[in-house]
Amino acid sequence: MPRPLEPVSRRAQVVLGISFFVLFVAAWAVATLSGAISKTFLADPITMLGDGWTLLTRFGFGTDIAVTVWRVVGGFVLAALVAVPLGILMGAYKSVEAFFEPFVSFARYLPASAFVPLLILWAGIGETQKLLVIFIGSVFQIILMVAVAVGNTRRDLVEAAYTLGAGNSGVVGRVLIPANAPEIAEILRLVLGWAWTYVIVAELIGSSSGIGHMIIDSQALLATGQMIFGIIVIGLIGLVSDFLFKAVNRWLFPWRLA
Amino acid sequence: MSGPKLLVDGVARVFPNRRGGAPTVALEPIDLTVAENDFITVLGPSGCGKSTLLRIVAGLDRPSAGRVLLAGRAVTGPGADRGMVFQSYTLFPWLTVADNIAFGLRERGVPRSERRDIVAAYVAKVGLAGFESHYPKQLSGGMQQRTAIARALANDPEILLLDEPFGALDNQTRALMQELLLGIWERERKTVLFVTHDIEEAIFLASRVVVMTARPGRIKAEVAVDLPHPRHYTMKTSPDFSALKARLTEEIRVEAVRAAEVA
Image (cartoon, rainbow over all chains, first blue to last red; front, top):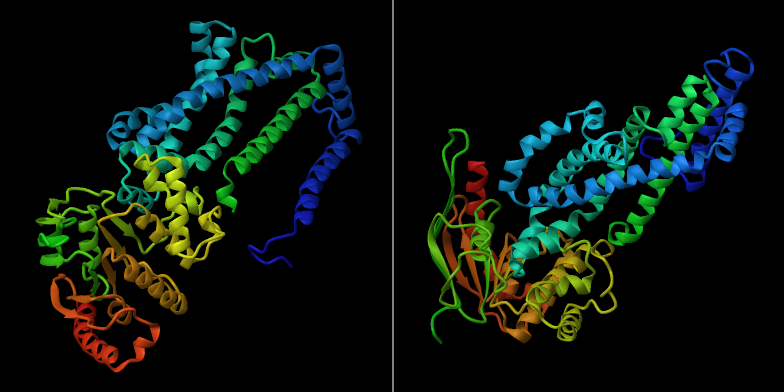
């Protein structure tokens, strides 16, 4: 019997992680191939893979994937460029925080998807609108989370820096930022995951390309295999970007693991 | 010599009341002078305000009354002229041992090559050769505090302030750290103000022990320690040492009892 909080070996971890995927696909295959669930509502795994292959080879789904990735990364990078510096300032200076915090807290609860109709009105159905949806969905979240992280910096480290002769810019640049860099990277990783949900919503409405567009197109054709393939692709990209983010963090912040 | 290195003149600290309670008097007006090259320990029971006093000298806290003069200049905030070693481990976890020690030097814009020489000298002084590129997480508590001492000294401060720096260490490590610090002081004669609740530590290190009362803190006695230098750890069992220890134990016991009654 495993005991609470007892670690498991790396090998067991990998085997367990993969076995749930296997179990999940097996259950799906049994439910669909046996005819328990009609093909109209849910394609079986084999059809799904076949549809996916057709999508990639005949309908240029690769371009759709690239377009969607570009939108997410574009909107997300813009949001991070604005939000990270502002969040650091808010965390470091209580007056800046008092000025922005109430509004940002309010704006954080505005659902990005609800902005889609308005943004179409303002920015049309081009790329600007897609980027804006992701930007709005990400920017307030990043600001608040970064501000909280920076505000919670260990006081004794800040005091140590003061007694070593650091001024305001020294404390911000050489203590607050490096102390919180790993946590900021972690926040970005988390919010990037949310940005993926916004991009699909943006693409479901008023779009002529992207994974979301393919999914809504497939719905009209009742092509559940294609829809599921699209969803799985999103999941896989998420998994890969998560993995890359973690690898980069490990490489950037060796002192955390040392 | 022109006046004391450090002058604490009528410094008091009252923490304002919270939610209608009475204000807390942490320090009653305190006068203290520290001569150049002197090693003073401040001994008191937990919660007597000795750390508050040190934080005020460091400029990390402001006195409610009185003033602190360092070499004749009023202390208004923290600065590089007063190096501080904290009880908690305050090395910057993202910097290596060498970069931690160089922190203050970089802040002052000391050129890289000069910085490297100073860091190497202090790494050697605290016995950390070979650990320059280790991160704090890879070090034991004693090594972290040695790095913290080196970091404070590398700035060449006018005075070194230590707030129970060995409080979290085990007894054996603590004894070794005391000898290390004393050895550095015997060679360099940096002015030191050292806060502790450990009687043996207070005697072994100091040329003068300042005993503080339980809250509200004030100075109860000042005891000169006329033991010869260089001091060896075997001195802790000598009759002179034991006599001082017995006397300070008596002084501090009364205060510890009072502190326990208040709490």
